[in-house]
Every structure is written in C-alpha cells, then in structure tokens.
Image (cartoon, rainbow over all chains, first blue to last red; front, side, top):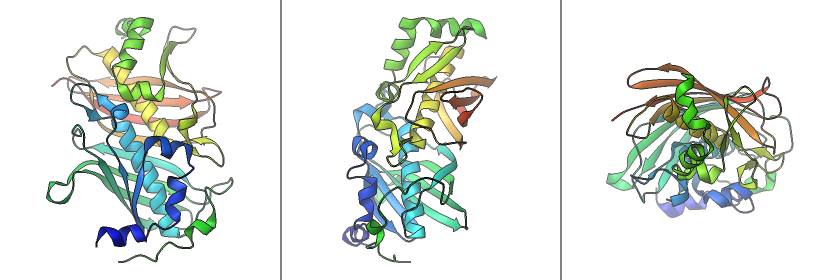
Length: 165
Length: 143
C-alpha cells in the first residue's frame, strides 16, 4: 500500500492524537496510518529523549510512551469511535538499543476485541524498507468504556475509512 | 544493601545521576529520601505529562517511563559497573488513573544477580497504600 493511501485513512481522527493535545504536541508523535485493527505512529529522533549519552540511544521509556499511545489509537481505529479507554497492563521487550539519529515507528494491531477488553500487540521499528529492524515489542490490554468523559469528539471518527484487509 | 544507597542519598550525586540520563531530566524527576532514610523517587507534575486532557490524567507511558528511570537509577546505586544498565523488559500494571498531581515511586530490588537484576517499582500519588501503577523490570548489568 502506498503512503498516500495510508495517510488518507487518517482524516480527522488523528487530530485527537496530535493537534491541540498538550502532551503529544510536546513529544512530536506523528500518526502514520489508522486502519481497521491497525495503527502506526512515528517518533522523530530527539536529543531530549536520549537514555544513553554515549551511544545517543533513545530511552526505553519514550518507546513505551509511543507504543501505549499507538495502542490507544489502534483500539479506537478498531472500535471505530472515540471512547474513554484505559491501559490495564503493558509489557515491553527491548530487543536492541536504538541508533543515534534514527526515527522510531510503532506499528500495532488489535488482535482481539471483546465487550470490555481490547488486546493489542506490536513492534517498534527503526529504519525503512530493507533496513527496517525491530527494536522493541509490545503487548497490552486496554479496558474499553471506562468512566469519565470522552477522549475526543466522536465526529472526528466519522471520516475514518473502513480499512483495507 | 543499604550501604550502596548512601551514594544515592547524597544530593549532588543524585542530581548528577538524573542529569546523566537526558530523558530522566526531561521528565523532571528527582531523588528524595523519606523520614526513614529510604530512597523515594519524585515526579513533580508537569503539563506535558497529561495523557487524557479531558480527565487530566497522567499518561500511562509517562508513568512507565518514570518507573523505568527510577529503577535504572536504583540499579546504578545497587551495583558498581562501567556500563549503564540495560532494561531487558518490563511489565506495567495500571491500577487507577493518575491525577494531575505529583507522583512518587519506590523501587525494590528483588534479586541482584551477576548479570540480571529483577526489580519491582510501586508508584503512588497521595497515599502510598493506594498505588496507581506497579511495574516489574529486568535489567542486564555489565558488558
């Protein structure tokens, strides 16, 4: 699938994950695509997020933050509406240290959706095409319809495409 | 065990250790000690920590990051080594939503092996007996 096709799936939905959100604006997370059961989000390399000054490798914590956010985005892409959700638990496996100056892309999928819980898993990659290599793995469970107001406006989701299989 | 922590209890050392990890400094975390002389990690609330602006809850990823940084620093204080400890994996259990107030964490080193250290971090806000999240982290030390 071409990048332009992927981007067209974003529509207004991605606003909730960038735009006026105080945190995500700060971390500069960029939604890459959002389809049925799948989502991807990119973290541009930033010196502020370095964990090891000597190697310039990104800290695992910011990768966890990226994966958690991408996981939430994926859940909303799967239920096709904005709803309050909460991470129940999240497991990260750090496969290898990241390289200096490289962007990280989180690609997650929702592999099971029940009435109350969404099960999500995915990899964080570095590089693109043939150079693409996994740096971390994530698996998480999200509770659906938690109490509290909605995360964003439901109308933002009206334009989300049904997604390609 | 307690002797190694004297290093962390020194304010200068603690500051230097936090600033040696750019991401820990970015989060704005601090090292403190409670009245019993135990090491407590403190994350003063900042606007950038908010994950859900509607209920003003701290992002789960920020909590996980804070707990990972706390555990890393505790591991540095526990063992002497030449390399930064590498986190192998971590599991975080979210127990309740974290409000827009300061967060604290306590790290327990469950096992300090030759190559692997197993830690548990408990994270709370107003009341230590009501944790908001608990994380288990494994670290590789040396080489």
